[in-house]
Length: 446
Image (cartoon, rainbow, N blue to C red; front, top):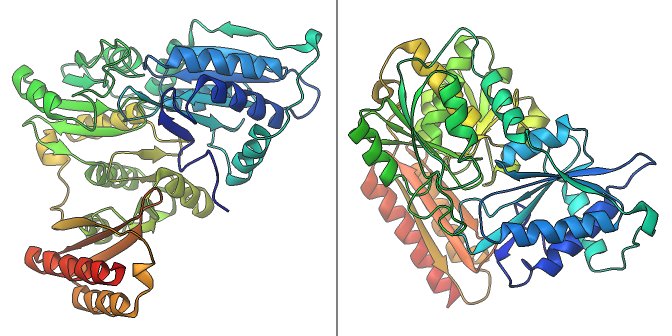
């Protein structure tokens, strides 16, 4: 059954429009608090946020909701999503909340929930919370209402944790690094962690004003970072997104390095040192076939999942892998974190650079990506993928690409759109295959 409020990554939407209103935020706090009140101990929730203007409003509303059902609240202030997950676990909290819309513009916002183990909630927990949101929630007696307090050293705790993931025998002395924090949640912690490890840090995207998060900066807009790396003579550029769970890197020549290349670098390094579990990594169907071939040449396996870091993490946990991620830069290193962590992933990349003593342009461009083409087919009604003519064209395309490429067709989860992606050694063949499938779908859709 389709859920009413929770999407693939929490609840998200345009601020002050349902479901992302203060009233809904308070209701979510009440519902989640009631759901996670288990046992007689004093219950606790930690709340972090990014730098959006609406964060204050939603944070206050959630505090009201949680305290009204008897939960104490610990306020972290602006903090990366992975920091909230880590602190939820380390502070023995019953629940963690991150108020963020990730890489979206400032006028959107969202609510992500973490369980006491620091992992995002299961479908069952989210379904149970949805049922409570639309129902009657029992409030606590006046004497049992929760309290709220701010933790002043939350940033220091996360910086210490992030630095602990960097090898003790290595330093960043003499390395100039540009870090783009997207005017978001990591605008203080990321530059500080790099500086404390010895780097000469050039920080951009570190002047949030409530409205400029992800605005021309960050992992989804790396042009400013590319220019700054070249202009400053830096050895590396690091771009995070608004909540710092995503990483894109720029080499010393100003060229962007995507998540596939970063995963290949980390997996190769960890395999060399005997740290790569289960002999492989987990990526989504969107990761380039070049990655798969590159890993196979080293004897490293690749498991593919549906799109979304949630699916990646589920496969990692179920099958015992400790490296996974997405082409977009969500990289999960489960030895350290329960969710994607842009800063921690960046530190693993920096460790490889220091160890190798090679420039980023040589070390990080591990393979030549195969030509990849993605087109969307919008339809008004019906089920084009079930049409026999469409099935026949897809079967022909798969046979044509066998051994030379790959085909991925998936319906959008949020709109009447079918995404058709193909990649292969021959760009002309890839384009022809995608066009044939799209044309067949348009005919079937009427």
